Length: 607
Image (cartoon, rainbow, N blue to C red; front, side):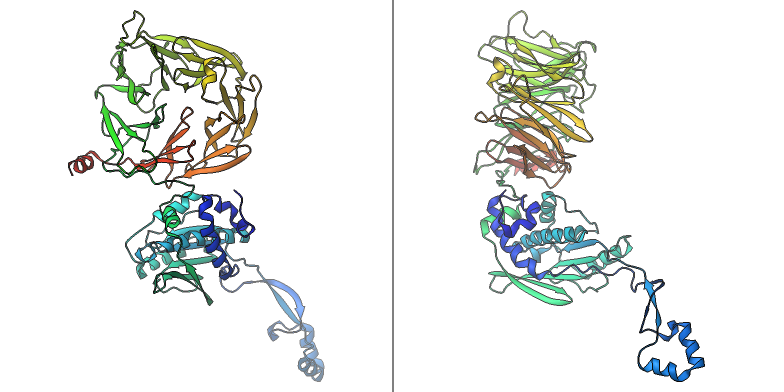
């Protein structure tokens, strides 16, 4: 992102925002920065303690007068008095232990009703200003909410800004709130070098625990905000009310050009957090495992600027069955279920139940904590279901014709062993990579046959494989990326259809970042890697040596999926919030809470 010189000091924080929001922050940061004043950390431990003797000096207490001077007073008293009058006496100077101010900045915000609206945007700007202040002073920045139980949070990502905006309460700050925080801060091992209180009608505080007080309030005509800083002296600046559309987007946590999801006029049932979202290959639906029922909830992704509510439907299977693999068959959801000694194909017309294979043929999980990779491919004449077990065995079931009445239809067949990964790469093709000795080989499976294998590189140290989707897999190698880990950092070797059999590029990620998807546009030769951040709250795109954040979440991402065919990213957070982002459109397609209990669902439906 290109920033003007005036905004370069805050570059690392402003990159979290879309370009259209920069003028707003340029105004706020430019007005607030000059009045904050220099770093003045509170002295720790009171008066510095003496630590031995230092130098000699002409002034001092007569308790530290040199012994030779006292001898002079006994032998030549007139000379002693003359030296005293003329300031010629010599004193011992004590050496004081160096005491450094605490390198911790604490800022506590009022999140009550008096700080709604534009004042919250000033909170964001002040947090970025204090982050740079801490960086320059070699200090740490921690923030908290005055109305909440004492807890200090770091400031290490855009998710913290969203958490600050989400911390709304209808309680006005009281004396009790501050006294609770004051007592808690006094008990901490590391005392604050600076403590900032930010809000309106703040309770009285003392300099021992509060070094800076910021009062934010609207003008009488409602056209501006007054920012008043009390820190020894009093400084004040008037701030304009931000433009309404941009302010509303920011207050809703839409930083990276995100759009508001369509309103939900019904309830989305609670979903399990143990299973990743499933994305349809045509890009119109996302499915999640129900928590309170044995089945799935399918959500139709809303169109841009859609005004009507979401289309949400649920499908359940028998409680005696356990799901092994789930996939979309066009717009409907299907599953491979384990029921006793049989495998049943739920909502998969043409496939009949079969005897469950032995463990040496197909390793099936005993529970439902994880799902096996499952793909459905089809053309105008036939369909094929593929499932990869936990030991690398690739199984297949075929349906020939519309009726599925062929003699070989539905029989379990085994295509390959030692398969590391597979993905749907075209409507009628699935790609996989398997180990064969010391090498890795890629192949494509169609409805009627297999293309390949193609040797893509040595198998040593490869831990993960990602695929490029597209038509090249129908006739040859379509592209993939191989991951190895060194010193905690992922290293990706990308091989495209045009560069095969040699690599097209190598990508080295910063520690903690993980690759979760691979993308290549038709008109470009290079690839982009979809990343999950080390804090589990941000999703980014690495492209041509540059990394940019696509979106962030206020809570930790617990499950995620990427569909190479549709370029959709679906994440599920610890708060059961589902977010679906489209790389092709550069915006969020969906942001909805999946946390309604069955009782609430029935109540809302009845209403």
